[in-house]
Every structure is written in structure tokens, then in C-alpha cells.
Length: 501
Image (cartoon, rainbow, N blue to C red):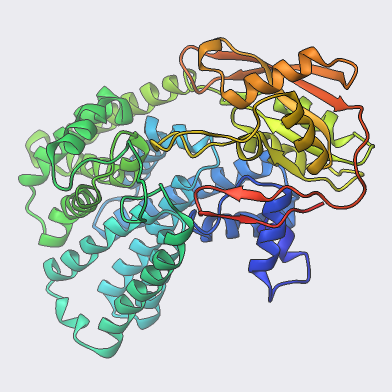
């Protein structure tokens, strides 16, 4: 959407453009999802074109940037270049970080931004450069507006200034004003986005999420992340990090270098305990640099000299090998929509598309990446046949269509010519109401519907892999002239948009 907006000539009217775009492709949800990462990706698309491959290349580039600036941070804290290189390679191959690097979620871009900000902050501590200080909080703001949880690193910055005996630098207009600006901008965006994020957070009003959150400062979240560390780091990586942590306590170094990564971890853990978020390991991804940072101490520990470098290198090499072996087991995600999108892009007859599929936003994105001869809108069955709130809430489904006549009326009101639906399920009892109703109507009215194609679909983020079948249908009945009449309902924002074409 941002890519299209940048090329639209409507730069001064982002809100109106976003509404029209969402009516056509009701998938990505701004402003609840912060804007900087999708904004950067939209800029990247202006050079590469819109495609899933380009998006994954952008994520890979962000991973490389995160590794480079982690390397620079290690150098700033007194680490030798070879050791910094090995530990940076280890960080970007940690199973949890490598897993999310194969996707296009916001964790890796946000990690790159907060790592750049951290490096700039250390430059400021060393040189007192005003520009470095401004850049540090600018990148931190960009990281926050990519993934809110990066704010957990900022308290560590103030602790480092105290440990370096430079906290007095904050007692100036620049020293206090820049962090205040960070808080004001971030806070303003959060307040702006809350009305658009019903059910997403516990403070947004209404019915909050029914999972991913524990009570504030309870052991449930801490226990979850502690139990997940072997999977996130690998057993060898965890052993190396614990060994490095023990070595850290025996280091004879300045206070900042000695306690740097402890401050990082404690600061971040303090935030996630305050927020109470848990139950998905990706929420802990911004804490993982601390574990790679502790491994550095093994190389410096004098107790195993003169073999320490050889032993430490062997341990890190074993970690790297184990991590790379784990790559083979990573699921490939959703596969099969590529052919569906390519076939749909070639459909010439005007009319909109009714869609009822798992992970349907992925299909919309792939369709958008093709040149299409006809402008059409996607209409979601979970917003028209039923109103279905996100699965992480306890809000019951509201049925809008109950029978064949209701479905036919929705097709006509929405000017829907094509239907894409999940035609089979491994677990029929879990098939959603709208899909079940749609399949029943399609099967019993072959004079009204023509099956154009079927495609295999695999959802490989699940264990076991789910095998589905996607069916593309054409509605043969007459459609009224003029634009569609169905409003685009957004349950997570509590309002609807006027219909499109």
C-alpha cells in the first residue's frame, strides 16, 4: 500500500489513499501495525518492484545490517575483530533469529534499527557527538515504530551512561530533550493507533486478547522464555552463553564493558514483564544479542590461557554448525498460492473476488505483485458472510448469511464475479462457518457457478503440515451495474469503510 501511495501523486493525502487501498486489498492493518518497517519496504519496492522475493531480500539485508552493527557494538566494548566477527555470525544464525529471517515480519528489520541506534549511542558516549546522540534516538524511534518491544532496550542506554560515569550528559537541553522527543513521538503514535486496535492490547478497551498476555510481573512469562531458550539458541549456544556469563563475572574490565549485556537483558526483560507478553518466542528476539555478547567473555577469560582462543573458537564453531544444521528443519510457510495468484491475475472479465482461505492475506499480496488487466477488489467472507473477530479474542462469530439466497444477494451487492475458497480441510470439524456455507452453496448450484481451476495448498508452519485444496469459481449469474454496495468491515478498528468498485 505504501509503495502504491508513493507512486500515486497523493503524498499529501495518505489517510484517504490508505482507505481506498484497504477497500481493494483488505489485508494489512495500519495504523495498528507501526509504519516504519512497511514504509522502508515500500521504498525498497520502488526500486525492485513488488514481489515476495524482493520482500525476503529486504529482510535478508536487514539481517546483514543487524549483524554488522552488532559487530561494531562489540568492537566499541573492547572486543577484538576476529572474536566480534565470530559472535556476530553466531547471533544471526541463532535458530530464533534465523527462523524469522526467512519471513517478512517486523522482528528482523526492528532488530537492525535498534542495533544501529545502540552503536550510535556508544559513539556518543565515547565522543560526545551531538549528531551521534540524535541519530541514536532517531534509529531507536524508527525501531519502535517498526516493533514496539524494542523500547525495552532504551533503559539499558541510561544504565550504560551511569556505568561509564557520563550520566551528567543528560542534564542539558539536548541530553534531556532528545529522549523526551522519543517518548512524545512514540507515545503520540500509540495513542493514535489505539482506536484502530480493538482486541489487540489489554489497554485498547472492549474485549482484549485471550492469549499471549500474563499478569504484570508474574513468573509465567519468565518461565516460558526460560524454557524456550534451548530452542531459541540451541543447546550448544545456550551452554556457550552461560559459560560466557560466568566468565564475565571474573573479568577485570571497566564497568561498562563488564555489565553491558547484563543491562541489555535486564532492561528488555523488565519491559516484557511489565507488558506481560509471552507465549510466542519471537517476543524475546530482541534479548538474544545479550547471549551472543556474553560468549565474547570466553575468549577474554584468563583462566584458560593460552588455549582460550582455540577452545572458544571451537565452541563457537560448534554452535555455528549446529545452527546451520537446524536450518534444514525450518518450515517453508505457505506454499501453493503462487499459482493461484498468477491464474487470477489473468482473469479478464470484470468483477470482484470473494475470498475464504487460510492465510488469505498472502494470496492478496501475491496477486498484487502481478500486472492485472482489470481493477478489482477482494472481499473477505469473514467480513461479509460472517463477522469474525481475530482468533485471539473471545468475541463470538456473527452470522450475516444463513442460506443460499443470502449468499447470492451478497454476490450481487458486492459485484462479485469470482470466488476463491478452501475446498477441503484435514480437520472438517474445524472448518469455519463461512467456508462451510460457501462450499454448500457452490456444490448445490452448479448452474450458477463454474469451477475454473483447483490448486494444492500446503501450510507448512504447522505440525503436521496441513494440506488444503483451493478452488477458483466463476459466478455465471448477472450482476448489477455500478460500484459495489458492501461496506468493508474492520472489526479490529470498530468501524467500516464505504464500498469500492
